[in-house]
Image 1 (cartoon, rainbow, N blue to C red):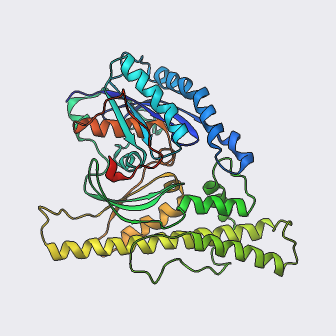
Image 2 (image 1 turned 30 degrees about the horizontal axis):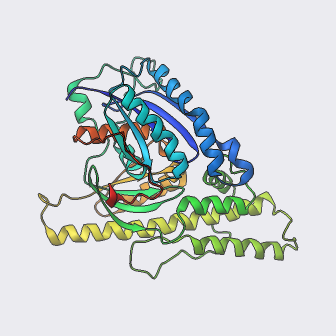
Image 3 (image 1 turned 90 degrees about the vertical axis):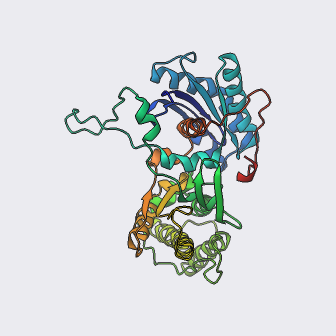
Length: 392
């Protein structure tokens, strides 16, 4: 029950991250090595190049996180590392280093599910602010206490989670650590993939990710300029599909070029690209809104039928997590969706920098698992490119 610290390591795709997080949620030290400059010219992540970059930076980010925290490995209490899903050759870099450290320093080891780590970031306590700092918003690292580290959580179970990232798009009912039910998922592309493909179609720089590039350009455009159909409106389930929207965007782009007398190789004006970006983003988010609204209504109806809040607590909290959760338009519209329901929901979303992949998510997920008495043996731990929740 005493406060403790965890070294978290993340290398599932194209960012090498490490962080030291204390069990009250304070991030004591963190470091992230981005590979944007490596993959931009290729238009996407090249696994072999990503692995090499992870190998070059893994010790650097770990040392920087420890130094920032003012700690040594001897003083860290446990090690957590992402083991899947992700790019297998990249996952292995972080996992092997974490295993070596856990064995060498005789520390508890926790294998982390990447998607669970994203979900649990919504529970990371909001940072304390030093009120004596003349009004400036600065995180204050206070001494930890037995009570604080067990009680501070931004959102309590059960809750609903919308996970939107480069590789996943899911709605999950979250009932506890390791207890997740998938209520809806994509049948083809993820939302992040759709943003990336739209960015490449519009010849936008994707070094920092296609999502941020499209979001930034969309601010200059008219979201109703291009007529697009919201996917799957006639399907009564809660799944997603973005491949049709991607195809419609491509057709609209080709049609617009024909109307303007441009060849396939010629570029559209920035104004036209902005309209396409804004129209795509508007309809993609509308698709999310419709599916999420259906899930919320279904849960509320089931609660009325059960009428048993003791064994089936009401769910009125939504966690929006994953890299795409950093999108300001998405956050704003989902906040409105939650507030407009007859029985309003509260929405929880991590700060934008903690929505994307970084070491803190692995460390915090490890803390959450340790708090319920769950850990793993490092010696034979494997990584998993595909890692369904049911296999945890």
